Length: 294
Image 1 (cartoon, rainbow, N blue to C red):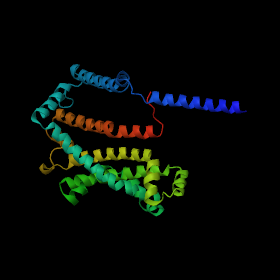
Image 2 (cartoon, rainbow, N blue to C red; image 1 turned 45 degrees about the horizontal axis):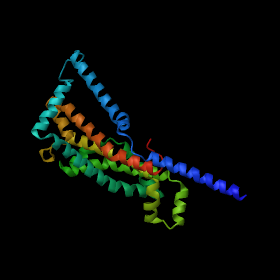
Image 3 (cartoon, rainbow, N blue to C red; image 1 turned 135 degrees about the horizontal axis):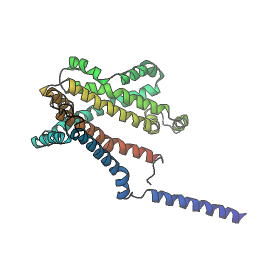
Image 4 (cartoon, rainbow, N blue to C red; image 1 turned 90 degrees about the vertical axis):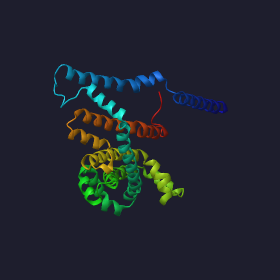
């Protein structure tokens, strides 16, 4: 009997050691060649293919009107001109600084609002449908009233961002909290985690995946709201952001400038996702054992 128990303990120890070895192997650094092949090379190839097709449309006269489709060289020349003049980074910074600051304001408002809606039945019944309706409302609709209420200044820009992003952040958090297993909440109450402590230590960590999805959507709404505001409401006091650059290109009938603005808007969106939200997603998944490096 004793030998059987000893063998069982030994087998369990072997299994545990094997699992530890797998975890150590999985936690090792991924070789650069594998990272290059899996993550860097595919978007590079896609970009090259797009450029080849784009140039082919010009070279084979499929689209021979430069006022409708400029060549890649023309758009590259527009980028070069803006860089030489020292305005390129200014365009980007004007919009990015507004977008990030407005998003932080939206985060500070949307998070407690989402907690309140998720945890208080009366509040959910009262304003839950309103939040869903606001989330489906195009952000461009807020630009005219914001201009009338606040004038042509940065406060108008931030108001449009808040109205576009807060509902998404709040609804994302509500969705995440709704998916928290009741067992977690009961266990938290048993350990004395109630009220604010329960929200901070139990509810928010458990609702983190849904909350993060709401943050991503909130940033997307923030960025689109800001671009709409910059396109519609232009003023020398506001400076020239990417949306204003896009509108300037339209007014000047310069498709090269229009494409320049479009590519910059796309670049900022991709950069924010890669630098902020993708690492957060990987951290959340890894902390839950859902993402293991191969």
